[in-house]
Image 1: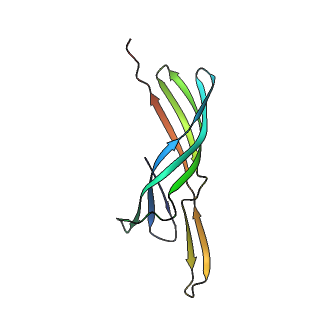
Image 2: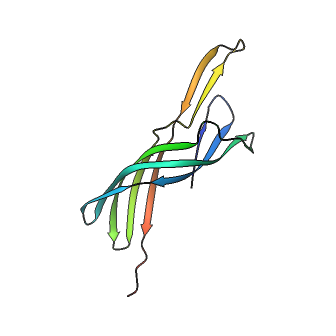
Image 3: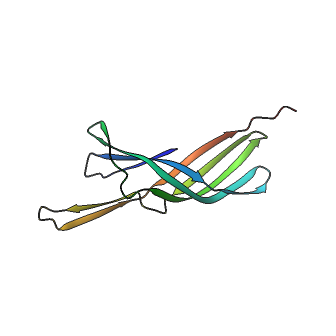
Length: 130
């Protein structure tokens, strides 16, 4: 489960969207201590909240049922059961699109939000006792 969000700098609201994300990664090991991963990820929106003046309010799932993104990762194995990886996860689909109008109702500006995630992963594998 991942939380993604965005804030429009001209406003004080912060929007949070919680997804159940399912990555499909292909791993390539060119060396016994080095690996690369890549592949798509789909996220299913579970809930949305907006934080206004420090308080959370839930709002309905509007126009953001699914999130499509890609994963690119590189990592190293330090021991038989310890790996460290750096993963980049850019969005393919938009998180939101907000239209701003002036007082007469004329469209002034449109802001489209996408997510970009950079994460550092530590993986520890439990050994099987035989």
